[in-house]
Length: 148
Image (cartoon, rainbow, N blue to C red; front, side, top):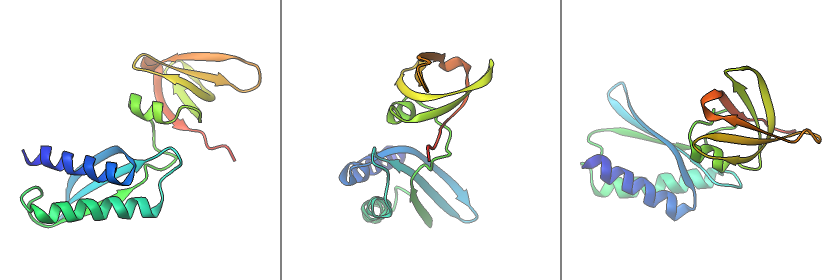
């Protein structure tokens, strides 16, 4: 029940700030618990976004100390550019960005993510090389390929 309340409070804090929850993790570090949230939005996350989510969630958790019993640390940050993309939501959030995909068949492929679903990724290759469809079952690692 406490986990469900926590998930609801996290969702409300993210909605209030206008960000998407990418990942959450709760673990014990010594005597304290740590709740780590990764948030994102299309134009990128700012420090103000992180502190706003933290404030909203901290205030809500202070009202019900049974949700997280004992001392805890709350960490809110962006997922970072080098974080591997895993879920369909991760891929959909990154449509329009260049990805570098390492496949189980060998050679990595880099292209602009055009479409993504449970089954596959469609990448538009550079130049006039066209599109390539990569089955998700072949994806070992996929990361945003930062274009500088």
